[in-house]
Image (cartoon, rainbow, N blue to C red; front, side, top):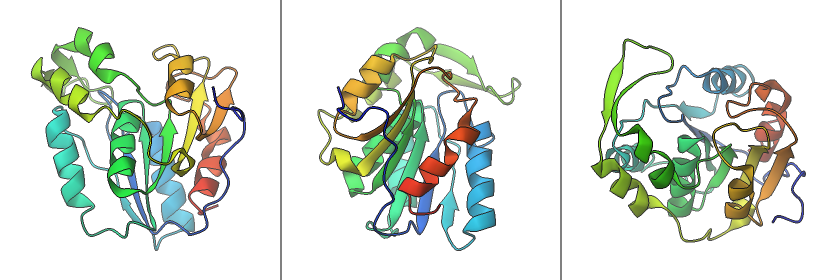
Length: 207
């Protein structure tokens, strides 16, 4: 367990110039947190390059798209924020690039947890939009799961004990050594994100 579970992350030495936001499973760039982050960055830091793509259902295709999209980004001033499954992908990005990462109730074992969702799914923000979560996607997720974190100090995780979907204990164990803000309540969606966005921006050097 992290020895500073309730401490928010410190500000980075360098201000973030390129910021990637990754949504969760069945979510989209229209998620409340993505919209809040986009609005704050646009209003207070319009010079920051912002990218919040719609992720494809295939994990292999998702990370290939991300790798291509950030290929020319500066590794020392780029950062990634990810929610739920997006937090899992954000960890992959951070491990590949060495960049800073903010994780919002990150999925730790999505290959295990998403097995029950194999089949046709609908988008949270547009029930008319459907996609198929295929069985082979589970193996693709397994291939992306990190064995350990190269530099836990690069991570800041906001983790809610009130998360009704994921285990806060698994999340804190996975990100042991990282900067963790552990919430006594809240929920999986972090409905109280307004209370934490300043800490997120502070860790990114954008407060």
